[in-house]
Image 1 (spheres, rainbow, N blue to C red):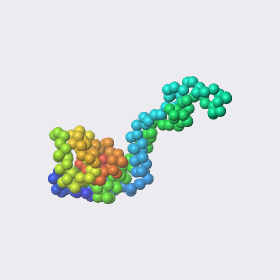
Image 2: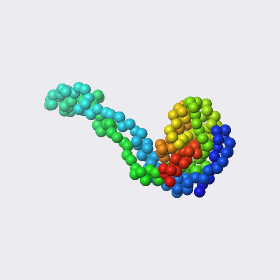
Image 3: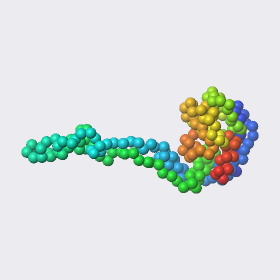
Length: 207
């Protein structure tokens, strides 16, 4: 079973925690993680891009010139696709890009991502993290003490609005609750900072 040190807010080691082998020591499945990341990014797309076809653009009701006798090619409308101000052929229209993976596959991908972070030494376990009010300066100091100043992802047991508001103003730093973990955010983080309670919550769900 993997073991990692536990730190306090000052960055001092206050103990050690044994992680679940099933969650933080699982075999890393790169293909499954890739699929999970693709799913996450696809679900973030709004799909609101829209273009007008020749039936939707304004004008073009009158035939531009008579059918025969002019020497020019026959035309039925000035809003055909090859005309300026004409309709768009095969352009994008509102659609849903999202799709989903089976729950077992999603959880296996998350276990792989967490195990990869542990293997790379990028998991930092924090003794506790409680904030009475949003204070960005406190999070900056915390991450500096933990040597996690680049692209840190802070995970608390439950969604903590004070932690979230404190972290969202820092470029590259994100915060979320343990139940809202996803593979993309875990892999995208330089350092994964989890509270001891968050580790227990994740192990409860994924073990």
